[in-house]
Length: 365
Ligand code: 1CP
Image 1 (spheres, rainbow, N blue to C red):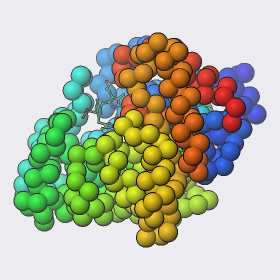
Image 2: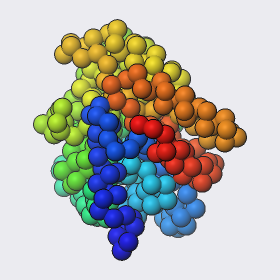
Image 3: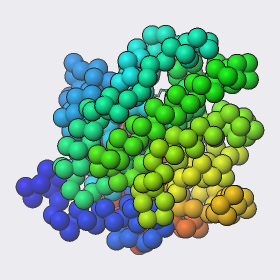
């Protein structure tokens, strides 16, 4: 009990096998669960530690990023840590003016509007990820064998922020640019693919044992636009780690919201696990994948999701029934790791998350 996570060796290896086995479609020692945005504003210990430090600064101070990553693991006994960082960190590290405005999200000093803007994007290097490498190493040392999940934004979601300059609902800017100035679009997407690919690789090389690509806004695209204007660059980002992934390598989760019409394409970028939002039942997701084999012949794959974040504020019996239903639906897939259908809302009572983890771990597996 001197370990910072206060777990003995047996408990730590339990947690490791649970997640990685879940991602591989094997039944491990317990039913695995973690939450997108499990670190952050729902936790009072996070708000206290962050006082006086901006969001992106906190990501670049290795001791702080590491401590914030560990907080939800200690508190909730989730089966994985997700590295505390942000999808715009590679931009910041490359020297692009970007901040996270409280209550808003990522805001760029100079949005990318033209081919000239794209041409001026800085060069990417491996040493720029030094603070990330250091933070991951510190975190992995503290975690013992409990897995750390590394992540990056997919090229489209990152490009959407770069073109809009801030969060937007309809993503009109990038959706116009991909048709109106396809050459600039291709160069922008090639740049973001490289930035995200290198960011992922840096985290894995420093010790992350799984990875997740977030294409949070892919659902704003038509299937055709996703397939022709976006998917090739998601594949390009993934190609930076393809020597490390594969059936016995690092599991790679590919998550997006509103992806019901492109689930097969989300799988066919090369991910081993499909992350699903709360809009579609997991049994239906599994059916759609079964009916749309990929070029590599794969059909169903292990799924991650999809507890509706809205139900975290519901009465316990309502939430419990929902969690049990999600587990029943997930049983049809060849593997299932519990998560939310999107991030933890900042107003969530963290004791509810702890109770959800306890519930999931208590149900026969
Ligand atoms: O001050 C704060 O606490 C700011 C809130 C915050 C946090 C905690 C932001 C700003 N980013 C983060 C951390 C973060 N971002 C993590 C940490 C690990 C964890 O999950 O615990 C991760 C994985 C991300 C990834 C991220 N950032 C995504 C993909 C996931 C998703 O939610 O769809 C996206 C879209 C972003 C952009 C972003 N950063 C921050 C905000 C509020 C947003 C979204 C803004 C919008 O709605 O467009």
